[in-house]
Image (tube, rainbow, N blue to C red; front, side, top):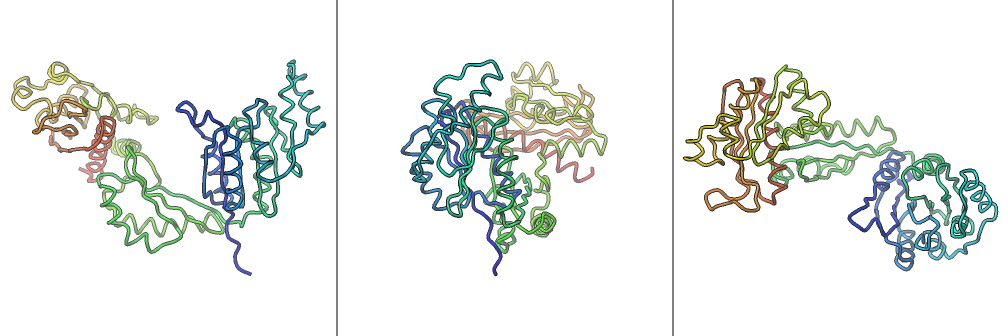
Length: 419
């Protein structure tokens, strides 16, 4: 007999509120992690509003693809809670009102001194052939349905209700059906290289592997290489990841920020702590973002002295000692001003390392000589002062966030040299 393939799962988050800017579907993220731990591959996630026809259509298609279908939300008492009706239609099974379940609901309301309104009775409607999943936290019971070889779970939307129900009722059933494989992921964080250049550098390595699989993710926090391995045991999957990761690391060189997904600010903090060095920052266009990222790390008080946001030219002169003549001659966005800001903050705050950042974040303020996205970063390393010039494409947020990343990554690289 051949090896059993991993189960394929789909997740449906149900509720029109999830299609607005005000609510985020976090259940799918949590469920994906739990399913991966069981060796189950999530092939699709969908968010569907409270529309019966759309729900029924999607459920029918999902049942044709997936071995496991998990729906969250839409099990409440109101008229727009359509999950039970939609699955009953899609499965072509009748709904019936379970009198025992209805009585349990009544007793639950009485226990808390509440009156059960008529619409709450909807929560006692059960799809024919389904197993009722007790809700130990809320009033909406879940349902488990076996449709041939398919496993269907209807879970409540609130995470405080959904998670205990999954652990108690869903995980044991899935563990019994799973192939036993384990899915393990690892993230390599990268900086100082474009996405296309990164792929060109590492593709000759990762394309030789189907397992682990490799994905490159780009975000304002930098580039990430996601590795996913599937094996019979977690230990075996980790060994597979180690083999590929070592080969990738050899090609990444100093572009590799961390081997297990740690942020650049966490890596820099660890380096500063190990070398007993301190850091101070002077920021203009980033408006304090560098200081924020550094101080987001617990324990940063051991190595971060402080920061000065010197946005105006007057602040640069008064707080950091930048020469007025330099600003008049070269402009606030210039190599000399970046270096003077780095020196000024290091000396005034008595740090070992000073960073100075000045630039044009946009959307206005650019000129042909100094376009939007032009940034200078100054670095003062115990009196050794230099600068770097960057031209960052994109909107204001991207310019500010990537400037922050590039400034901290420069510190990381200098610390790696051991100077």
